Image (tube, rainbow, N blue to C red; front, side, top):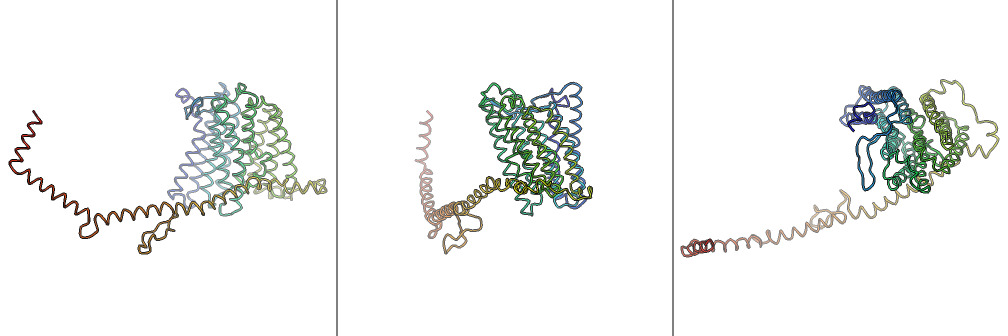
Length: 508
């Protein structure tokens, strides 16, 4: 570990750590009440910007050394935890793939932070936005730089939490919170696939390191296929491919900078990165690669068709984004991973500019958007399918939202009808006895404590409080009288001499 720390690449952990430090400092300022008024905004934005800029500078130094001496590759910083034949570690992967994307994402994150400092000026949630945005920056860098799947999953979840919080940025509006919940629930299916793959990797390969996953040829083809499918499900959900596409249109509820960094330039490409990282694993299962081609093609057709009938800028842009990302999946399925990587980098930069320009798009173009093409307007079936977005929103609501709401209602009924009456609720207790109104209890624990209290009170009354002195006091007086009699006997000379003689007998 020490040998790595003397090199710039050994300090790569600072790239996700610096935004986390900015999160802690800004959150502390908010909790201490030091973020009131317009005067507190520049410091919040400056801390977030400096953290992003410092991470970008460190990555540029590592990139320069990698170009001169070669990429450091995979290295392990410290042991995390382990059990049996497997372990998890704090490891990082600095190869051309991760260095290229992490540097680009660091630049995009810094630009979005600078843009947001003016765009969100005097917003009620200004500080909250920057706290969540820097938290996301730490998470996405952890995904890109992690040397193992478990550490990448931590960053994966950090990105998901940040997405949920920024979609629900206007938390006082039910539409925003509803869309955030829908996106959160849909992405949990992908997270389940990721966890499944990690569990299988720990069982069959003895760890989560990307280098170990690349050598998965030691396991059977069936096991390899199951392992890959778990990661594929995670990638399809995070990159909004069919059948998970419906969530990304609802995610546009957040502010424009968050839409740019999440669903235009950065997070929507996380699934593509995961597939590029697992290329050695994918090539061993051609049928799964063919499945990527099929899913990517169907998603591209769906996004292209729906994009033709959109009437607002952000919706049109998000369908264009899904279309381009689906082409990346097609390229990966065909084995053209270098093309997919170049496509990802160019599309991320291009789409970032589009989303940041979206609020002023009509002012820039000075013309109305083009209507759908005539062939689509004349085909009633296709036009209806495009307008209804293939009814995926309704299908996703039926498969994800309604079961979750039903489960939540059942839990609430269980709590109200059984748990609350069983354990009681604060402030809802009733008097145990009519003549003692101050003694109240609610639920089984409350009544048990009340019964115990009443028993102790009866014991206390019987021993101490009954009559003039109580039974306990009478017993103590009687014991004292016996001891006094014994003391008087011992004070007499004959009994004293007997005690001395007994002592000598014991000693001798």
